[in-house]
Image (cartoon, rainbow, N blue to C red; front, side):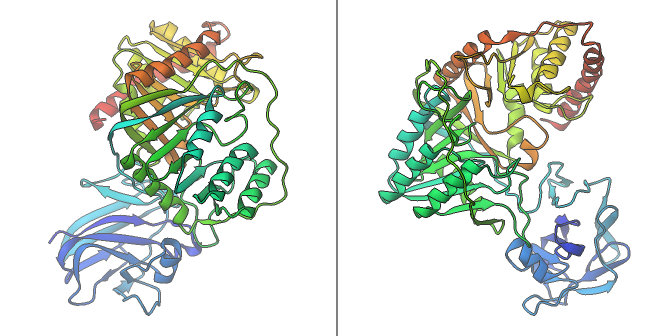
Length: 539
């Protein structure tokens, strides 16, 4: 009989790791099956059968506090509701160095050891997929949504600051039954007012926000959350509790699900600079409202999972002041673009953020990237998405990278201007059709680049909240959409071209950038190895 360990977590969050566990998969009788760590082990009570998956936890009560349900068996606890396995010796999963073996009689069916076969990281869950341990990082509580494709979608593409508030207000005004909001920060009293008006006309409105954003919840958000709660709108924060750790480092998504038929996805937080009054200055961001029932149901499932977990709590806002809008003028030149017949692929981080690799690597004509910032994995290895773009340029396909130049993105020694320099030096050294620029933020232009977007072949577009750093695609809850539509691609390309032409051209400066050049050549070697590895893995 084939019985395998299909999942385990040896280093969870509760004190003394009382909630550590493993899952067995198989079918049939478990008589004669033994699980051991080399020092102790357990077997199952006589007559136990398995039909699919069995969860065995160290302490059933601790496991329930972390997962919301009891396991099937426990090996050390004393919950009367859960049967015990028959333990021998000292069986306990060490955090940094240990092993697990499954025996049927004297035959070893499976062995997993760490470090080596899996990564040792607190909170990481290890999954067996197609006979090998999944290399993707999956933390306790994180969802496992699968990739999906939706055809025949219609919608409205928009950009900030030109027309974002107009589209937001119309989407909310069109709601008849329900609005589900999941956003990192909401500080705009105007946007909150739209939601309040919808609630007052009978629409069920729910709001989920990050409970511990960088720098803490701003005073302007306290004012908005107080206003929403006072009018009756339930507001929850993803903060984690004493017993349930938040599954994500940050809830960094920015989306709404409307009436289970529409989804608004954007790169922008619900702030004044993300959704300014038309004619006022704000961030450069992209957004889209897509009408498609299947897509909306997919996103509603994501919202329900995140908002319904034990890691959320009712918001308890403090006193705050309303956000002051910008009074700087901006010539709004981009109107919303209405489309139909689009193919749409949701990108959910961390679940399916790997979809960005085939998006970029599949380019045949061009790649345009507009990002708030990009950070490398290490000093001598490029961000993996940038590495994809560089490898695309090696095939002779033009790649343009536009980065923000707001003060906090260019003042350091390893931020956007250095990233642009490395890419341009690499392009010059290899003769690649690759260029990077930092945006022009002069008066009359956008306030800063807050976008996280990609255009491939002018017909495939990523609209998302996913920053290109190590954290965002791996540990955050992020959402995005890949839209296949020539008209949508043309629309966003025209906006990108406008920002690109205004940006300062960064010429290679061989003397000043000698350290970058050395790093670039090291990166080149790493990229060749990276590309070889990806081909070997079948990406």
